Image (tube, rainbow, N blue to C red; front, side):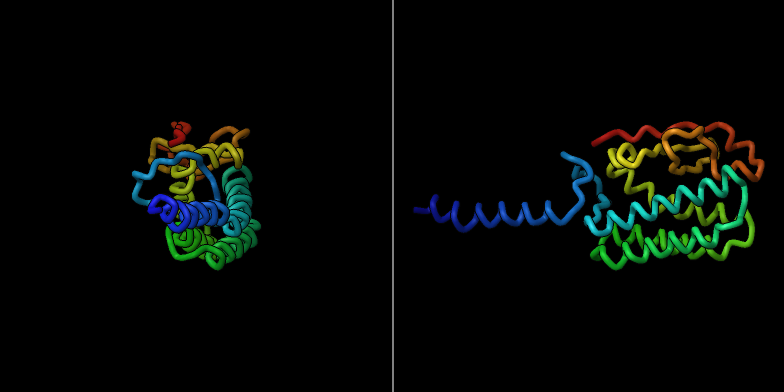
Amino acid sequence: MIDNYFKRYVIIPLICYCLFIHHHTVSAHEGHDHSHEAIITIGKKTFVHLQSVLSAYLDVYHQLVVKKEMDGISDLAQKLSDAAWQGIRTEPVGPGRHMMQHIQEGAEWLSKANNTDEAQGAFLSITHALIPFFKTWPNQLQRNELKMYRCEGGHSWLQQKNTSPVCPCASNGSPVCLDVEEVNVRSQ
């Protein structure tokens, strides 16, 4: 009698709840380690906006590092800000929303940058907001065809997988950015 009650009124609702939670969050990494304090998860709706953030982020990287131009940065900053704002609106309070808020703040800073140094600082602030997500879900680097790099000066950034690594701060002639290594983020 108790076993039947337990199965019917405890186990079945628990299974339904777990399926509901799995359906409404991004399954970015199977079997992840729960020992980390700040695991960043985002909902599927927010994940779409994260894709837009990453696209604009890579365009900013290309403009600042490859082309070494400020032209178009304010437009790209607006795209970043809009995507992050949409992510803030779709993500409930928690680490995912916090990440999107920091991206949006960095995008605002980027939109006001008057020179390359200010743009690099804003870009790095956006990077600092994004990196914890990819450290939590390293498989997302592969899914988004990205690699994470770090220079000897301590700067980290994300870059497209098929391009040669160049530190976003190297354009100012800083010799500490010449030694670049890929950050090997292991799956949990």
